Length: 570
Ligand SMILES: NC(=O)C1=CN([C@@H]2O[C@H](COP(=O)(O)OP(=O)(O)OC[C@H]3O[C@@H](n4cnc5c(N)ncnc54)[C@H](OP(=O)(O)O)[C@@H]3O)[C@@H](O)[C@H]2O)C=CC1
Ligand SMILES: CC(=O)C(=O)O
Ligand SMILES: [Mg+2]
Image 1 (cartoon, rainbow, N blue to C red):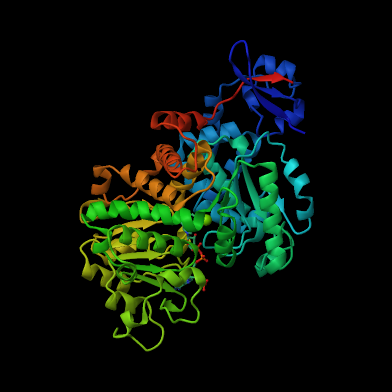
Image 2 (cartoon, rainbow, N blue to C red):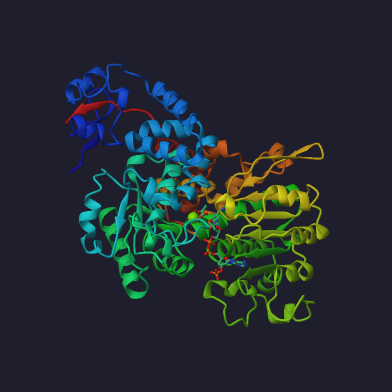
């Protein structure tokens, strides 16, 4: 049963919630609980008298009180536990705190701390959030989705927990990721928390630690594969279409064997995108666009080595190839500048291990035939840097320290400003820290990492790295697609988003080596991305027709700021 409904008073125009819950039920509902901010009238009419303490506090006081408590927590995991507990008590207080202190809070509710939390979710979790779908309950999916009791769902982030950041298969302990992504949809994108739903397809896990852990709270079976897995995904997607026909579905942290298939199968059937493939590809493209401005160079002046050809690597490589072709290079010329490396070494066209999504990025055999290799057989990273002479390195392998000093130094020999993206999350999985890059390149590297890193002093200069993370893309893409009522998310929309982000980087920031806007400005970034996506949807005939001013107004109107809405008993 719904516990509230949004209303507008026809006489005064006041917005309010008609609330059906009473007393404890109301206090226990994080969507509705105002804690010490219930007014006298609300306390009387909603059965709260005696259940709340005497003081009536404005939201700001509750937030500063929470901020003090947050600051007293001894470490980041404790801070995470505190924030999630606050979210479980009152979403408005939680979101006001997070939006008021974005730079401090995002690394806690999101990477890197969310990774630490997912590793021990079954031990630290207090309350369950979102929906868990298992092989045992999938045939009651309509009941499950009705149990949510949200008045409306516009945005769903779904994982099956198989590749949680760079931490591997965490089963349904990985639900921390959709929960964290939803927090950013609200805090950065401005979506209303009542319309966002995290979902876990809990189809088991192949992680022996979890299967053996008596406290593991998930579906304790080996991970489901094949036709039965596909039936669960299909049943879920069809149910989303029935219950929430206008919702956007974000695929998050699936394993690579299912991520590409799910994206292809559903991208034209339901408004959806894969954050790890497309979102990461777009953010990286935005950062590269800025890097080209900083270097006064073109994509076709650079050569690229991408290591880790899974979801992120494929999304990034496809965008680089597209950027090269947009500058006039032919297919073959573009391919010859992009060296993609997976477990078996450089991808070459006749490699029997080549996976389907990797084919467009494989080198021609003839192009590497006369390379001088360290040893016959596998063409490794050092072979590629020595022979292919890349000027841009991208790491998305989840292999800590993979970019050795020797590799970084080789790259620094062929370009004044090596571009190094070590994008694996969380921090502990980074292929090279900014400090390692700067030390190996005499401070010349333009560096981006997936998780945040502090600046460093080098020869009297302060060097800064960017946080190249798909959080710059997905909140705005989601908001823009929803405002535009887009029927799908296209490559053109994602390209428009990349351009919008890169254009926001100021000359002063570029001078400091930053390739993406400051994280504190993520809300403004999301607004710009949303407008760009909505404009592009209109241009492609896939979204509402609005002039630019109307469209920008619609985006601004759709963005929620954390505040308490008045309640009336229903
Ligand atoms: N900054 C950001 O916004 C984002 C960062 N990421 C991060 O990137 C990492 C990878 O994510 P994703 O692409 O989705 O994962 P995938 O599992 O899809 O891909 C990882 C790929 O790296 C390969 N690989 C592993 N070790 C090596 C190695 N030593 N040399 C070459 N290739 C290797 C894997 O091969 P195999 O499968 O054979 O093991 C696989 O193909 C994660 O840490 C994730 O957190 C992801 C998305 C966004
Ligand atoms: C950022 C992100 O989506 C990842 O690391 O998987
Ligand atoms: Mg991800």
